[in-house]
Image 1 (tube, protein in one colour):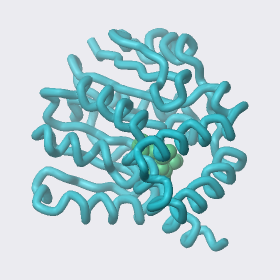
Image 2 (cartoon, rainbow, N blue to C red):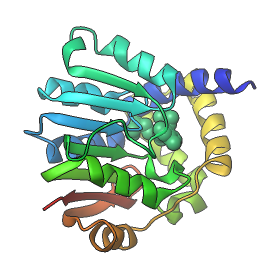
Image 3 (spheres, rainbow, N blue to C red):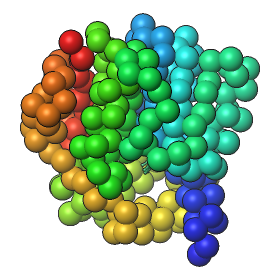
Image 4 (cartoon, protein in one colour):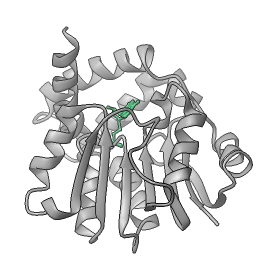
Length: 228
Ligand SMILES: C[S@@+](CC[C@H](N)C(=O)[O-])C[C@H]1O[C@@H](n2cnc3c(N)ncnc32)[C@H](O)[C@@H]1O
């Protein structure tokens, strides 16, 4: 499949499958709650923007960045009426188009695993965060890599329990195929909760205030850190 077509199909299927998963909704809630009261929020690797929409509803200005233009277009369509508070950037997230300390809150949800240079990515996001700002980062760990089939089965069971599986059957077919392809070809970084907390504190000088396993995988990480 041509790359552009892969991204288009994957983006649409990803949006429909993920946004209705109860464990994804739990993850969204952890990011959203950690960012309550923040005005300028960077959603790094925002994808089709389920979280970005909730942050807009919360009253924030959202700086939504992703290298996938299909995802940003989908977000912009869903965000109609919030144009004055949504700013989209189609680019690589290793270098950000913001001045030092411009941002009040950074969200990086399920993005770090894809980065060629994860430390460079993390440092760049810490750079644009103001003092007193919050950095929320989540992702899977090696357990998910070793059991992709098990993770996908749990997500399907969640849809089955909600009676959504028939309606989403075609999306699931695309989603499963593209996810397996993506995990094998693109995902590179499988940080653990302890390891990444240590990096945020020791390498970036952030102060970890909350850390938990990722509800999407029942392992992995959701870490909230502050810049002092
Ligand atoms: C698994 S999706 C997560 C999307 C969204 N944050 C969510 O949780 O649903 C990973 C996203 O990271 C984006 N991405 C991957 N590498 C990137 C890079 N180097 N720069 C910007 N975005 C990137 C992808 O296009 C994709 O939208």
